Length: 396
Image (cartoon, rainbow, N blue to C red):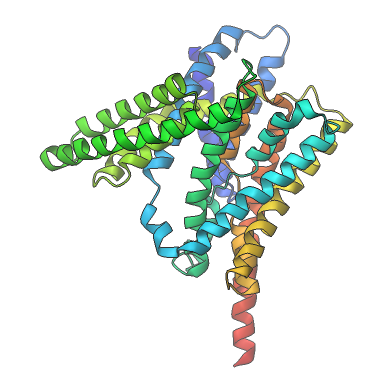
């Protein structure tokens, strides 16, 4: 496994730097590194990447996704949601329901409206609920619009979007697990019990970490204990409640996000994720991307799926923003700003593949969705604000 690990880290860094120069998310470079190594793995007689190495990389990738979701929870700012208020809540709900509905319809239609394919189709829709606004935030910051009404709304809605998306993901994984046949009400009950457990334990952890911060602020003990909490939440959520381990990791981060050393915990834990586990997770997706099953039907489904992902966010978030009193131009900016996908969409898709709910042939289309939306959002936002500035100049 050592040689594949060396190649992953080397190619991931080189390709992520290339993507950065092209104004693409670095995650695209990490995925391309995996695709490149996947091509090597598929070559007959190669001895670079063995099946045993793939199994080992898969284990490291599971740690990677848990660390990524823990970091996402740590970076969640609940105060920003409160600042924007109800519009962000309504925009988030529409940004979850509309893309998920369109994704479900597309997947179920291609499955011939087979009743046995309902859960699988719901999972395809769930993949489209995720929003990653890192590209949008960078674009708005560059334009000096991040602290405005549009910027604050997009950031707050994306935070809520991740929370709701992770919960829906756990629910559908429970329904569609290969053990199968679970009563949906029991799944819902276990999910609610997990939240009660997380809230109760969270109160205790907040007190413990507040005392730790008072006594030894910025001491390495704090991030170590933070990681211990992350792994415990991840274990408890899946083992005791049947909720996805990434949900537990996310809520562990959410519990600690209000601590005064949250940024320090995030920075220290991110070192592990950024150096090893994160690149392995994304590269592992690329390595396991299955292009062999591509045919005209799969290609048609992929194209419709991509359109559902783009149109669902633009219409769902944009029209809701308009109903909440935003101008037509600002509503369109919100819709386009929410369309970008990255880590969470990949995580959802990979968990679906790992759980046997969906087919790995969807992974290449998720990669295309990330690239297309990452180009679309920054270009549109810049043109939009440039047009607005030119209109003001002409009116003087």
